[in-house]
Length: 301
Ligand SMILES: C[S@@+](CC[C@H](N)C(=O)[O-])C[C@H]1O[C@@H](n2cnc3c(N)ncnc32)[C@H](O)[C@@H]1O
Image (cartoon, rainbow, N blue to C red; front, top):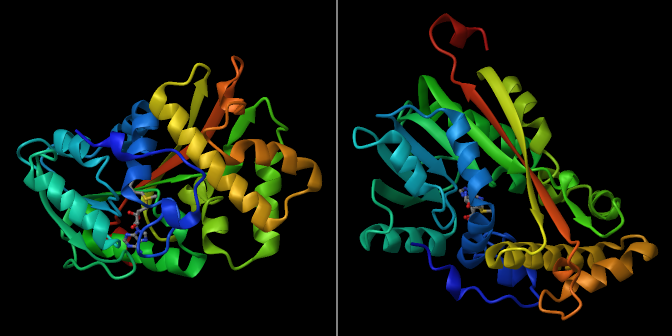
């Protein structure tokens, strides 16, 4: 099982969340807690994709490997699972977990980038990519979708899951807390790929259609948690809100929002809003699934 116990809540900096690649929210400790807190909905999202038994499947941007066990279970003994990630420390951890037997069914984990996948054309029957495309600007995301289409065989499946941060909500708190932060983030830096990418969730279907995928379908899932939160849920939402509170200060949210964000900065605070008996926290995630065109379809796109 994954070692969620190593993660200690604290006021988090972007570096503490991240990896050596400099990306926030991509470190293994954080990813393990996030996956555990949202496991029922996240597993349901992977099942929604419909990866067939026997498939050769790639987890593109596997992080600490949260989805790999379920993916292996879905493809079954006749299938095979491959994983790839940009961050060498995440690749090393997944390899360690594979060797120790924590990830049965994982054939190989490789270091590489989604913008230039180190695989031959038509290498896979299915590709799963969770919470990675939020890091890409529009042009980079188009490149990534072309790469997905290249490495998955005609008729195969590509699934992209990602957050839509505008769907986040905390109670009790001003319902506009998150929308204000999103708006300020883009105003502060219109070129901030992560700020824009974190809002792309509900557009994914249109992006896949634009990239020529067929029979594209999309599902939005709200991960809603009510007090009393389970330990992993408390740690995930506490740490995520701490991260967002740091961004809120940096990006200059409206003055009237600052007190609320400051109350969220320290996840261990004795007065933390998540510990109220009426607390509610929600994040919204979206999965879009498409089929790679085949035969005469391929020429038409
Ligand atoms: C938020 S984590 C998600 C990990 C995992 N898919 C999950 O949902 O638990 C994003 C992951 O994508 C990886 N990543 C970011 N940019 C990448 C790129 N260009 N190519 C491959 N992996 C990338 C990061 O290193 C990190 O492990």
